[in-house]
Image (cartoon, rainbow, N blue to C red; front, side):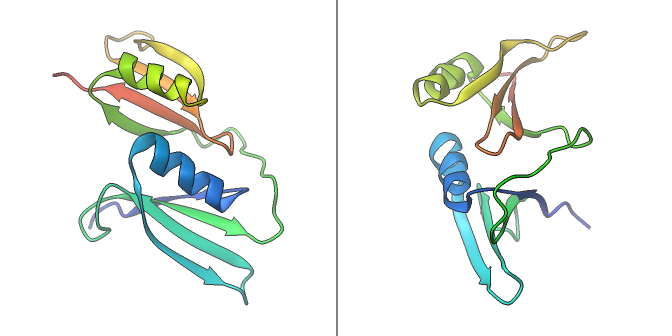
Length: 128
């Protein structure tokens, strides 16, 4: 058994694909339209699904907003230079919701950004 993907419902599929591919270096792995079901699925990630965990975006036709609720937390990405990544993302217009710094009650350096749908993406600096 292994972890395959996390699904996020998105308001604008193309905008979400661009956000994760352009800002975080992921690539579009596949995209499938289901007109009878009135939805489209797109999968993005860092490598082939047979070897990597990926993000699945679900776009439901005509759905322009979602209540994110308070149960889902965030998607996390490991980075080597959190300050440099945040500087680049800020320059690209990405909303930084928590500047880089140690996590509360710990030493791990983290930051948070927000995607176009309001989902949080945690950046975790990996030790050298």
